Image 1 (cartoon, rainbow, N blue to C red):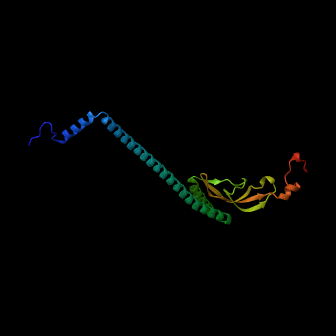
Image 2 (image 1 turned 90 degrees about the vertical axis):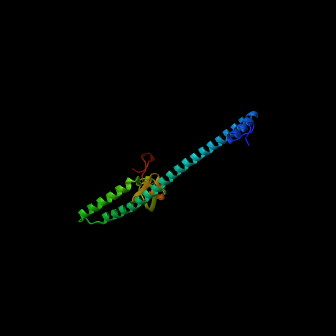
Image 3 (image 1 turned 45 degrees about the vertical axis):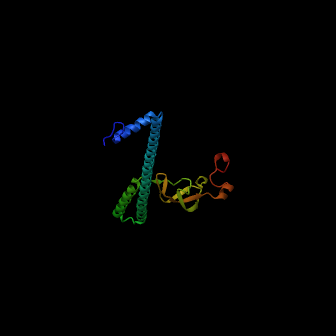
Length: 198
């Protein structure tokens, strides 16, 4: 049987017939176009969100990697600093007749300290500073002769170190304490305007 000219014979003809039907309906094509545009907009927004999440994840990974590296650098520096402390104690106890050996130990100590400080580690300046429990570890409180030394670090027993803003190792210190009775009696430093003894 042969198809007549009115009957569609293939898929292309079916699509043409459907397109002709939609085109004959007012607003049908426009509605479909708006629906497709809305879907495309939704897909683009989802893609944009996905890209933003991917970028945020990458930044988070980089920050975490940098933080872990800083912690590990600090751990390595602490090991080197402990070795430097041991060498300092041995240098302090070395007899004067061991001059060449002492000089060799001093060179090794300086090399280890240089390597520790190369990783962004800084020595914490403690002597003469007000005592700060976040930066200093007080091992003793000693009496001092001057009122301005009250609450200040008067002796550093072991050096402290910083890594950026983080205290890697607090300084072990002795803190000065001006006797309270000396303030009341007027002992200690007195200014000229105060009319004290000269």
